[in-house]
Amino acid sequence: MSPIKNHMAITAIFLIAISFGSALTAYAYDEVGVYWNSTYTNQHVTTSGAFESVTGYIVIHEPALGGGILAWECAVGITGPAVVTSWQIEGQAINAQSPPSFAVGLDSPLPSAAAVMVASFNLLVTDYPVPIDVSLEPIYFASIEGQMAYIDSLDPEQLRVMTPVSDEPVVATVNGNTGYWCATDWQHVVYFGPVVIGESLTQTFYVDSCGGSRYLDISLSCSDPTLALTGLSGPVFVADSTYILIEVTYTPTEVVPLDCTLVLGEGWQYPIYGVGEEPVGVIAPTPLAVQQDGQIALEWPARAAEDDRYHVYRKDPQGRENRLTDTPLLATNATVRFTDQPDYPGGTVLHYSYGVVHGEVELSRSPAVEVTVKSLPKAKTQLLTNVPNPFNPQTRIRFELARNEQVRVTVFDLTGKLVKTLINEQRQAGENSVIWQGRDEAGRPVSSGAYYVRLETDSRVDHQKIMMLK
Image 1 (spheres, rainbow, N blue to C red):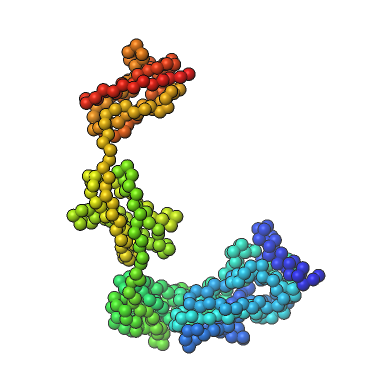
Image 2: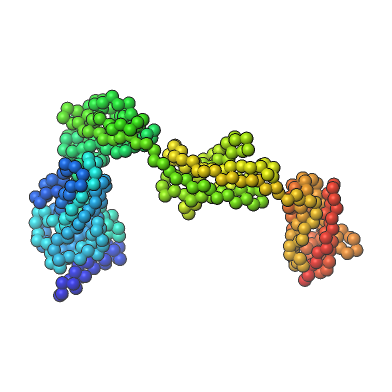
């Protein structure tokens, strides 16, 4: 078989499993990890500064099945300030996906060993001393749902499930890790980075018993009031095979770097990095205002930040400003909209603006748009054209009122005989309507022909001719 055809045949094993609900059988759980040295022993590395590169090796710890690795699949995740500058897959291989996702088929199996390196990568660290986590996880549409897997050449129709060497997705770190700690074996830092002055950021850490019961004494080695233990503190007992949760909260008040250390006990001291920063200026364009039928519709483009919300403000001619929104507005399709119905006489000049809200902080205020309230045309008491006309079997009788008042609307035939009383009730000023079903007081359908509609109020009486056609 040609190398290309063999590649396609091996990769097809994964594709068949995807298409048919993983018809292949999974064997016992094997392990996969990432290491920073060629002997595959070091999962944690420290650089001396930013813009240094380290080489990572993806290694499958293979039991002695003996045939060698013929195909494998997993995804690599990088959390923190780092960029992968190159990937290298071992052997004559085809990757059915794109790095950092791998569904690899090989022309010939990688030799069997206790630890088999299947790929390597160069990682460029872009900030220091910020922790970087490297994780291994299943790819999307994995051959075995939710699992990483590989195939041994001695049993090419069977999948073997792989789990991370750490029993957690994070399998390696650079310059300390950010989440799950063992109090004795990991190199840790607490990294907040720049935090906007006045805002709070909490970092959470799970500290494991690490294979035996132990006592910790949790404290901060500084008296900086902007930093606080918001969870456990003081002496804490961690039972075997359990963990505790530690929370540290940073609320900067000025642009000054932190100089603190988290202490878990004698010999377990970890530096804390963070600095306050001034709020970033936010550009808020002037809203667009459109006035129609006594309403003022405002709209403006939303910012790219998903967590942004917006409050709307209106200033009257006396300079009094009112916030019109009880809760901040969300954007819809990248646009924010708000409609106001101001109760001001025509000619009043109003000013509308909006504030950009992030969390509990208003980051900026837009320029105000000026709106002169238009005078609404005065309604008068009269019948309007019914719709439709001619009609069959029903029509909408439309009318408008100059003020709120008692209204009687009736239908007569051409002889002046009352056919139907449609309404006799109080109605609001403005346009109103009522439906005539084309029936008389007894509920009988009326015959074709002309009819008169009569509108009666205390201030005016109006008539209009309508036509029923069958």
